[in-house]
Amino acid sequence: MGKLIFGAAFLLVLASGLFFAPAIPGLQIHPTDQFLVKPLGGAAELNFYTPTNVTLWMGLAIVAIFTLMVLGSAKRAIVPSRIQSVAELAYGFIYKMVEDVTGKDGLKFFPYIMTLFMFILTANMLGLIPGSFTTTSHFAVTAVLAMLVFVTVTVTGFVLHGTKFLGLFWVGSAPLALRPVLAIIELISYFVRPVSHCIRLAGNVMAGHAVLKVFAGFAGALGLFSFLPIFAITAVYALEVLVAFIQAYVFTILTCVYLKDALHPSH
Image: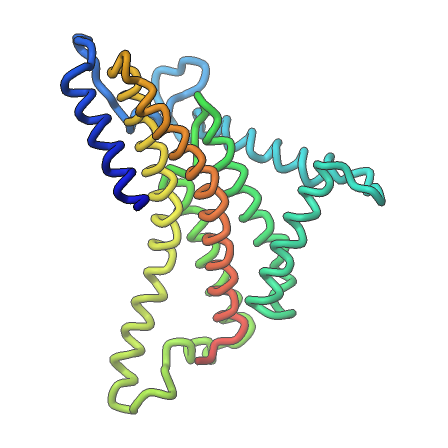
């Protein structure tokens, strides 16, 4: 039923655009323009040291996290304020996740995992502010986060277990003839982890914002019938708020799963 309603609404928007849209010469919708990296202060060219909109919004994410987690809970009141309640809820949520997935041994990595979750979630939420920039929509950002997780997990595995960590790729429960083949598959899947880790986050965030931009373009082009895509924008925006949390959660829980392999490299 839901798919039928969505399909009917989409066809209605399309039909109204074809038959009732005002003639606006040169009107074009560019859903990817919002992801352009631009230098701050009107710099003529980009260098590795040039402050950009990415730098600005990453900095704002750090400020927001500091305000919530440090300033918001500085008083440590017995009856917490709303900000302190949110900070304590986030702390308890991630702490429980790390403990459940990795065990007690993984709690030493809790500050790192908590930082990952809060940065991704805050960056996603800030990106939903009209006129803002979503840093997690860029593979350059998510790839660095994914590679940090990959290096941390790999180094931890070898430091704790030495060459025994390679047992992660040897499926001892499989028939002997299949073990070399499965070892190659496991090795390939292990090195693909950071790729899927970063693409999942950036791809989902980018797709949602592109859809919002397309519907916003429809709203500007349909004139009298602009209320139709506005309804769609409202629905997609609500979905994007949910996606912002889900993608931060997925990235974090996958980090915990990978860390568990490093702490307990056995099938």
